Image (tube, rainbow, N blue to C red; front, side, top):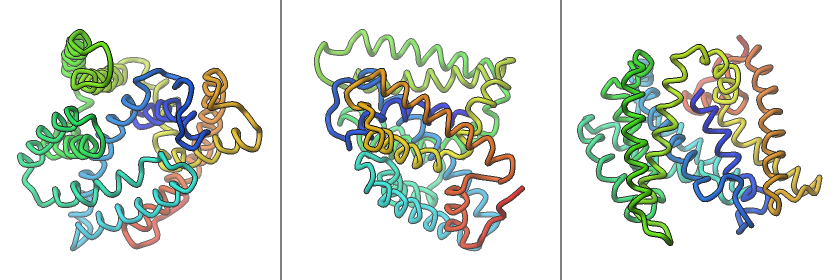
Length: 298
C-alpha cells in the first residue's frame, strides 16, 4: 500500500518532465517538493525489499549473492531500456547504487549497515542529495529489516504516531531555520522529514477502519509497481505526442492526465491480479532473479 501511494506521488511529480523529455517546465504540479516525497520513500522501500529478498535467498540458494546480483543486473537492463523513453528515469541509478552499495553491504554486520546509513544521509544532505542519498536510504531500509523493525511495524500505533510527531517538529524547525533563497541542508532535511511524516501517517491510518479503503486504492498499484512505473512513461508520452495534450505547459492538464493514467493502471492492476500472482514485468524480473520460470496464474 505504501509503495502504491508513493507511485502515485512519483507520477504527479514527474509527469511534466516525462512529457517534455526531462527539460525545464513552467511549474511542477506539486510545487518545489515534488521529487522529494517520492524519492526518499521509494528508496527506503527498495532497501527493505532487498534485505527481505536476501533472507529468502539465504534459505533457497547456495549463493544468495548471485541471486541479488542477477536481480540488480536485470534492473539495470530494464532501466537502460526505459532511459531511451525518458532520460530522467530512476531505475538505472537504483541498479548502479545497488550494485556498488547494497550488494557489498550484504556481507557487513547490521551495525555497520546502520552506521553507514547514518553517515551517508547527512553527507548527502550537505552535498544536495543525489546517488549518495539513495545509497543512505537503501542502507537505512536494509538496517530496518535486519534489526527486526519491519517485522513488527504493524503491531503498534503509538510508535509511528510518536515518531511522526518528532519528524513533524523537526521539519518545522528545519524550515524555520532555512535560508530564504536556494537549496540548503535545512531544506533537504525538511523534505526528508516530511517524507517520514507521510510514512508514519500512513502506518497509523493502516491501524484504523480506513485500512480496507487504503488497501483497495493503493495495493493493486503497489503490487505491480515496476509494471506501472514503466507503463506510465509510455502512456504519458502517448498523451503528449500522439494526442497532443499540453502536459508540459499546463499544470491542470498534467493533473488530469496523471489521474487518467493512474485510474487506468489501477483498473488493469486490479483485474490482472485476480488471475495472476504478480504483474507481467514483475514476473519477468522474478524469472531473471531466480533463473527459473516462476508460476504465473493463481
